[in-house]
Image (cartoon, rainbow, N blue to C red; front, top):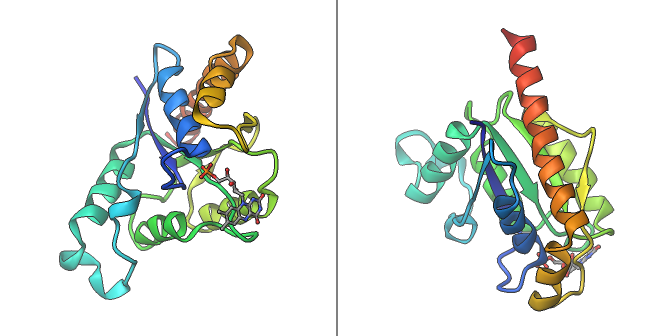
Length: 182
Ligand SMILES: Cc1cc2nc3c(=O)[nH]c(=O)nc-3n(C[C@H](O)[C@H](O)[C@H](O)COP(=O)(O)O)c2cc1C
């Protein structure tokens, strides 16, 4: 069964992006497992001097979780037309390792805006050699909603189906990726 690691780029308690990754985990198809990464706020600021034997525990845990996952799902807000520092920091810890190389990844969007951050994330992750699944991006508009409204939107049948279909399509991409590389 493919297992995915879903990362929200927001630390906000009432984050729309975290609500979306949690809903993806809850609505994954029965033959896929989605685990939500909770360590973004524990990562020290990336320093290339702290790699190898000196890798801090939280960074090692992230690297391990990405390595073990069959694919990574990133759902991230935009701050000032860019990728929030916390998310970029997490990606920086993965740069000079094998964890990201060829690792299937897809972006999911909780805002219909954030176009600069979407493009920047895709560029950063492609540069890191993630195998980006870009054919069928998932977008569920949660921007500006409070948790009860988010829960209502995320429990709508059409949105539950969209989440399930997105994870299923990503799993199909991974299967095709494995078949073409073997
Ligand atoms: C400091 C800051 C800067 C922001 N800059 C942008 C921006 O440039 N473009 C945009 O579309 N939204 C921007 N937003 C709106 C956020 O993307 C929006 O609040 C989003 O819901 C945050 O994600 P979260 O709900 O997961 O915390 C900004 C929000 C903050 C707090």
